Amino acid sequence: MNLPIYSKEGKKTTKKAELNDKVFACEVNEHVVWFNIKAIRANNRQGTHATKGRSFVSGGGRKPFKQKGTGRARQGTIRAPHHVGGGRVFGPSPRDYTQKVNKKVKALARRSVLSDKTKNQLVYVIEDFNYTSPKTKDVLNLIQAMELDNKKVLILTSEYAPNVYRSAANIYNINVKQDVTFSAYDLLKANVIVIQEGALKKINEVLA
Image 1 (cartoon, rainbow, N blue to C red):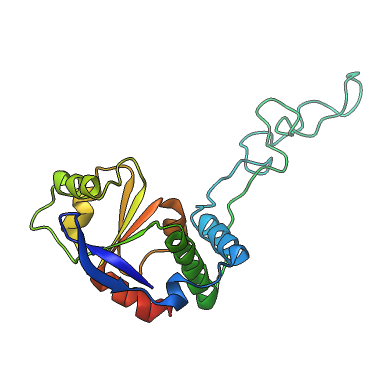
Image 2 (image 1 turned 60 degrees about the vertical axis):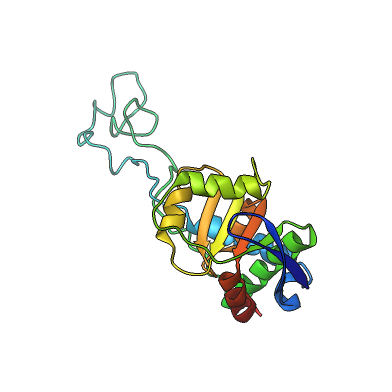
């Protein structure tokens, strides 16, 4: 499969980029994509939620009143859950939400999303580029030239490009990742994927 290559100014050229069919034209496995996304979202949870049970609430060390003779129900502590200021019953406690996903499953999920995006003509290939200094206007001009305004765009760079990352940092709907460091979740959140030539070669090698 071939796609036209855009220049770093955002103009379509006559050059073509070759996409590996094993990566960009494979059968989409929706279940694997769902499984991987579920694990990614779970792994992003901090799991630090907590409430105080009756053993963590201060006070209530003694019996509030005697067992018999008052005409009221017997009470052992004023920090029981049914008292004001008492502990909470069955409240959340800190836990680890981490879910393990095998490398082959992660790779299949990424291939599936890439194939689906390519099938729907949402993948663009662009020449390798970098900026000498971070300027938001440079990225905006590129996106406008490619007619990708008001779309969530994922840019995959061929190398570590801090100036490209900083240039896009102030634009809420643009995300920048280096070659194959993206996840299936990054691909799925983006409406359009822009891949630099160098990154495309790395993706063809690693994910195939």
